[in-house]
Length: 231
Image (cartoon, rainbow, N blue to C red; front, side, top):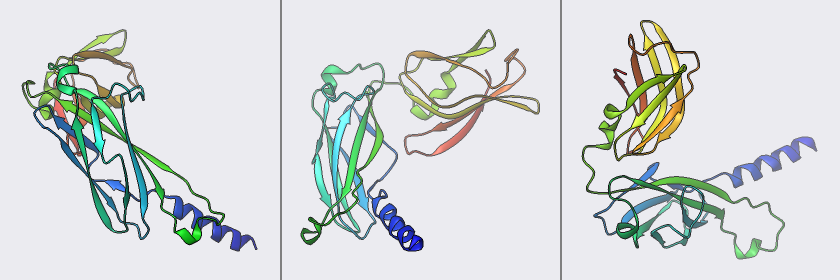
């Protein structure tokens, strides 16, 4: 009996797992673009209903200058779906000297057959969140090269980091390497444009002079790459 119940529970867990995926890990919307197309895929043998909502970093949707078309759709088994992100008032409302970030939240639930709608079933909605970067065409340089402009300094053993560029810089990991010794400075942070941030190293760093800083960064395509630079 216990084995049978465990088997049924495993079936429910499998049925509740997320199946619809977005192609890519982030969305870049150039200011000159009239729309940005985002692709979704359903590799599962059952259909899903997907709802898309756009929000800012505080999870508010009223001030987002984009609309998603369509906001709700059904995606069939082993099929794809295109969604258009259309700027409505982004050029008028958002700054031109830096990127702006928003979030695309998409919730998926399995589509039920008519014959099964009256049955007792466990249905779990799965929500995913993806960053949407609005990038003004007036920005100089490349996002992948923005890390070269970072400025580092020490303050009571903590590392102060200044980002003077107009780009967001997504860092998976930053380390200070001196000779054969390595100290983790931070993990999983996003530096906002034209801002500064304080990092608390895993160990106290007495000086930045005799070492290098290794930064593992996430690029526009969601790929990780490491660069080494002087502090």
